[in-house]
Image (cartoon, rainbow, N blue to C red; front, top):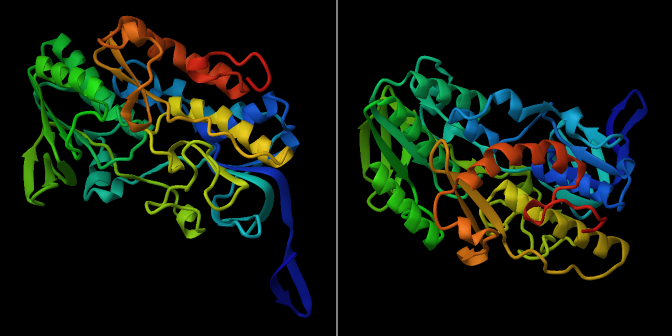
Length: 422
């Protein structure tokens, strides 16, 4: 019990609520962990508590398709209660602090919770305010500024492209890491194809903070040729720092010189950061991401703390596909160390996938692991744009997410998980 107030001789204490497994975050990673723990028979719902303040669950990979005119935004959102495992405990107050020495979690409403095992799955947070003026123009419905990194702004992007009558379109990408690092390019190719089919004369410019178009040489070569053929102008080492009325200001990452560029439509991607409480609780690496072993997903200091997905320090591209590959490794290792007192197995090798829309009908499926090493599932289809991969991403993945993943039955590229522990 913790003393929190004293009034006329009476002592009031906060009751500490205990859960055997605490999961901070009800996004893709947290939901997948809970579903597989229950589905594999490792835990019953009443043993798990999820901390998630959001009332809606979002299929965020779908927002690229929303902005690209391929999907209705309603198909990317569902009430949280419809996707959470039945009978699971939920705390809807945001986590403000973890005390790993005491196995305690503090929430914004003053609640105190304890745990045996903790999974941090808070994702990565977008911060549009890091770009001066961005929020103002994004919120202005009449301003030609949008972003697929928010569902409302993705809807706006779709409308702006539909109404576009020609001129300069700028697309930006901030410093990495960001969620789905291929998304800033997907919206370029989708928009290019839509406008090209309408015969709208457009100049497309891609301003990227990094010095290369993609981190894996094979796909970088394919995408470079793609941009050349589509006459998309790429500008590297250029960071968007300010948005004004029809003007974007970029900072050269070598010289720090500022340059103003006029636009008729701007698609921007915000800088992104992990939740502050991770670092403030002493659980982060130098960049504030939950510091875990790259192969076991166990925290480097606290052996009953785990992390996966965008908020983790895992040095791989932050995608939903990565989460699907990380989840069974984390679940197995959590159970091994907790129930059987065994060492964790270094089973995760960095697999991630980035399905890059290259038009309204084709897609390039990039798959790789740590050190940008290729790890392809369908090599015959992954050296060029593919219609088959396009339909896999557009039509099948959303169904797999909403109908299979939330039940703990989706193993990513390993397919359906029919057997417990598979």
